[in-house]
Image 1 (tube, one colour):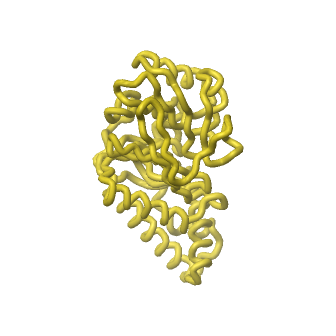
Image 2 (cartoon, one colour):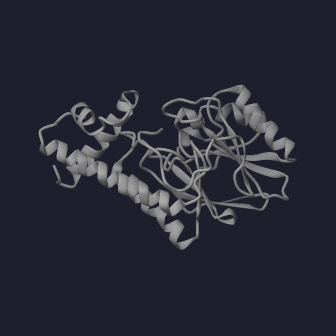
Length: 276
């Protein structure tokens, strides 16, 4: 879900189904919209010499897309061994139960309501399938249940909607919280500094080659927007709708309802910190 303009970080241009790193292949869902950019990126992740793969975010309930994910894996000589969810929004998770039927896999997620099987996901979990290692990184903020997955072997991180390949994400009030989101961005920045992560594999939009640059842009963008909202309130714009019309005047009006969710989260943050 996006609310702003192009990111730095050298995106790889047009979003296409296909390999993105040595271990990650994208299958693009046909659900393009203002809120999903080119569509949802469904990621197939596997060790090159393994016959087992992990799928992250099977996407919407679109049988053609779900079967395309299975076919893509099978053509590469791989069987889906596990399904993971970055969060529960329908464009990422609605097809998970049907995908589990097609593949016979468990579905692991932070939210128990989204799981199929006994195992969930938690901060610090290390997932290993067919020699592949994924590390669970808690990144709440866009939603309370948002997770990212660190892929150390490719120096990459799969971010769901926490960082997008183009634009910036919505902190979806009331489930999303801005303070949590800022902490999540700082956690991702630590991965770029301490663990050498340089590639963002987002839930929407193109791959980003400069992970640290993308995180820094997001932090700067949030600080800028927050200052604008604070100033708008001081200038007499009181309701979220009034603030959106003033602060987000440069944003396509079709995105204003999403922007209002972000403004509500920003107003909560400013109030909690005694700034308004």
